Amino acid sequence: MGFMTVGGRGAMSAKNAVRRAALVLVAAMGVASCLAADDGPAPTAALRDSSIERVLVRGYAAIGDRYITAIKDYGPLTAEAIKSVSALDSQIRLEERDGALVLFQGDRIVAQRPVPAERDDGPAWGETTALLLRSAMDASQPLRTAGRDRVLRAALDGTTRKLDRNSRYSDPAESRDNRFNREGDGGIGVTVEAENDQTVVRMVQAGAPAEAAGVRAGDRIVSVDSHGVAGKPMREIVRLLRGRVGSTVAMGVFRPAESREVVFEIRRAYVIPTTVTYERRGDIALVKLTGFNKGTPEALKAALEKAAAEIGPAMAGVILDMRDNPGGLLDRSITTAGLLLDSGTVLTTEGRHPDSRMTFRSGSGALMPRVPMVAVMNGRSASAAEILAAALQDRGRAVVVGSTSYGKGTVQTVVPLPNDGELTLTWSRMLAPSGYAWAEIGVLPTVCSAKFSHSGTLAGELEHRAQEVRRTMAEWHMVRDPTPERVSALRALCPPSDQSPAKDIELAERILHDHTLYARAIGYASSAIAERPATPAPWPPQTGDGSR
Image 1: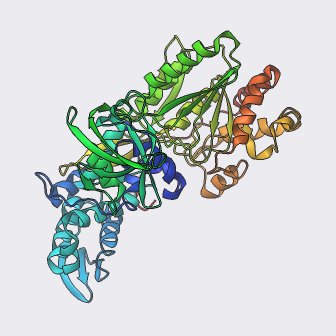
Image 2 (image 1 turned 180 degrees about the horizontal axis):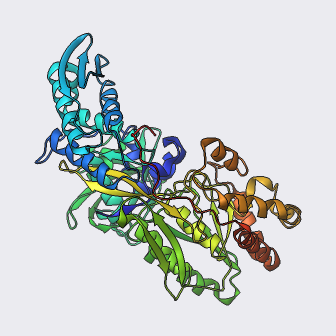
């Protein structure tokens, strides 16, 4: 089955919604798929031990086996695949006539293929789609110039676009980057960001080779292994910095503070991008959680232990800042939740495939079980961040502050393809411990920061709105499979924000410093769950024709 991910493109609302967050996090050692369109074309590489036929047959078979909704007609997926390819040659189009798929270049018929005998036969449609693409490339000079990889990419982008916003195709280069960010690999441990056509080191990971070599935040990268990087896309620069564990790389930087260039010889090590940072704010521990990868649980555990040692028994509480957190690996989000929640349900998933229906529970031994906690969210908080926030809120462990989250309440399975690319398919939806599904609508904060002018008014205004807050949360928890209009109406109650205002943290601190206020806010979510009628939705969902 492969591994489960609850991050990816679906964690992005629109690409622009999390572009900066993804860049800062991912560029530590790689470039996420969301950056591919903006960082220049990926290097063209021959498909390894594969062909268009093998890739498409495997991909369409996986859709039939694993996609959350059974596809009863693959025709629209194939039509969208060819339509997407026509962006490379506007003369290419497909029509279905009298039981045949007819491929045109302009007014000229270049191929005809019989419609597969069964409309729901994924592998047959995959093979037919591949044959149509071959014919299109034979007839079209623009497609031959674009190359096999770009044509395949366009076709699978079109296919997955017909499924849902969270399913996607990653080409071999993107897949390598995705695997790095999930699992780590050889690198030097820096976070880089583009600024005025320069590549700037924004953060140096503690304990990583770059820190040991003397690299500093603010350094401008000017060369890698004596080759200038001016004009190169960031994706390529980052890839040059990565490499086999134990190998060395020479990175030249310009250091503005000293007005000089420095060259560092750095030996690459196994590096997992940092997703957790800790800052002491008086008697409060502020923990920033930017993603969920292989190293997140241990990093969070270390951050909380450091906070406990520094602040001691006087600790007023923990702020878990998950604004702009696009998500990550499902299993790591569950393990992370287990650090904060004692025995009980964290998440339930339900889908069409029997293996997609699961319940995840936390064990005993949560850290700081009696220390008050506030989780801060915004409209860019998605997937694994929403799993954690919903569980903390439902279980009465934390008050959620901020704005409505993104609403990526589905789990994706990643299918390796014969060309070393990946097909990411939505395969189940997620339910919070209380049983509500937040797909599309998001997780509603207990304290919607947009409704409070400043922290000083919080206690009175929250008391004044107590009934409204409980009623809204109860309604939120009751919704299953809402219409687009219903989604819009619900999300308008606390509009998702792309911003991370200081007010969010101020409200969180105010709540943690007022025990009565904290208890009241915790109680709002609990009472909303108690008031919610039991309205389970039937499962599995209706079969689809790929035209969602």
